[in-house]
Length: 320
Image (cartoon, one colour):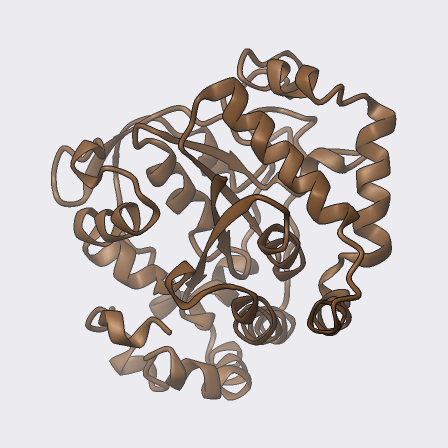
């Protein structure tokens, strides 16, 4: 069985940095957002996290060669995903799984890819931060894959503020601009995506293979919080390259795609980005809070701005 840690959640929620931290642990291989490998036009020009082209990267080339991953084959996988495995398709795929009628063509393709990564890198855990509930569901149903699902949530007001800022894909500003969303649209997707993860992906897994964690808790106490995740997926938390409570020596990633910080390596200090508290406009803050309030309360986020500080960490009993 190939063990995969799938990090799911909404955009700008810290999934890439979480993947980088865990991928810097011996035995782990962080592959970033795998779904971008199937695309005809890659927003960063198929640039790997290491800076090389994915097709020339010394890590990815043997994987792609083992799979005989021609352009035609990549596009066939892309078509499978577009036809039946978008986020809008999750409720239907979930019902088919419950009835035993699910077509496993796309899950099998993911499983083959994960196995090739392990074959070529020797990793004991593959870290996939594709985020999407649809890909998480497919990965959870892939044959011979031991999937651990980490749902990473961030205060929707912080995610909304970040989602309105300009960023570019790639290691420099020449990449395509990342998508920007209004506060209302961002929060709608934040709600829908987190609900799909909890109600339609989580039920396909055993209780010991799902965990929810907040971005604010990860950044508030990184060494301990990431150490708990490492223990959960079978990595040695003592081998994590932390040099202090909030600092570690990040290993250069070999990620298919992700936030531009996927290119970060060397000594890195982890700290929560709280700029939204001062810079998110009153109207956007009110709209976000109104749309997200039920899940905010469920996840332990205060509704009032003046109390919206990193809260106490969620206990293990609250991670269900």
